[in-house]
Image 1 (cartoon, rainbow, N blue to C red):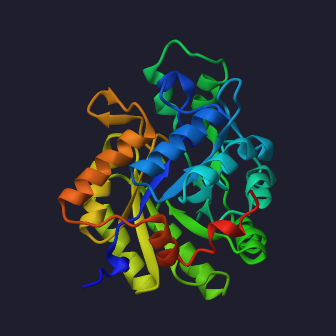
Image 2: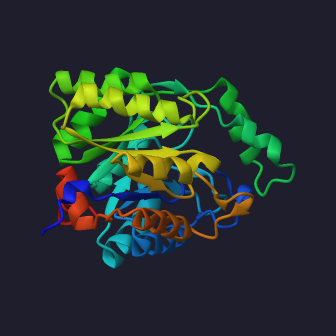
Length: 313
C-alpha cells in the first residue's frame, strides 16, 4: 500500500540565522563556505528544507548582501535537491528593503515571512558571556531591549506581492504568537494567500508565546479553526525546548524545524557540533516513533512549490 505523503514529516534545518553570535559556538557557520558545507550535510542527514541567512565573512554579523548569498546558494543547489528557503527577516535593524534584496535576486522556491511586528528580546543572552570575539556582538544583543521587529500589514502585503505574486515564491509563515495566525487569515481573506499554507509556529522567543505544551495545543487548535485542511504546519522552539517541542509537534501530526539558528545545543549543556547533528537526532526520534520523513520532492508536492529549476541562482 502506498504511503500517504501528507502524513510524512518535513524536517527544516535553519542553518545560521541572525540571533546567535560567533562567541556563543565555534560550530555556528559564518563564511559562505561554512554555510554551504553545513547546509549540504544537513540535507544529507535528512532535512528537506534548508532555511538560510547570510553572515559577513569577516566578523560574522548578519548581512543582507545578495553577493554573499550568491557565494553559497549555487553550491547548495548543485550538491543537494533540498528546498532552499531564504529569510525575509534578515537580522536585527535591517530595513525591509535590505531584507528583500537577496530574496528578490534569488527568486527562491520558499522564503520565511514573519507574520507580525513584535518585541524581539535576545538581550538576556548577553549576560552569559564576558569575553567576545567581535565588538559588535554584545551591543547587538543588549540593544534588543529597545527593539521592535517590524512586520507591518503593509510590509507583509508588499512581500507577498513582490516575491509571491511576481516570482512564485511560497512562504514559511513564521507565527510567534496566536495573533500572527489571525494575520495569516487576514491575508487569506484578502486573496493574497492561496493554500496550502505552511505555518511555522515558534515558541520561546522573549516577546512571543512561551514554550509551554498547552500553548502548542492552543496554536494548533486555532490554526485548525482558521484554516481547516488548507495548511501544513511545523514547530520550532528556542534553545533547550527545541527537541521536546519538535517531538510533540510530530506526535500531533506536524512537521519540525531544527538548526543552529534556533538552538546551539544537542543535549543538556552540550553544544552541537553541526546542524547535521541536530537533523540526525530529530530524524532518529521521528523514525523511532514510526514517522516517515518527507524527501525534498515530497516536500515540494506537499507545499505546492514551483521547483528548484525555477529559481534565480
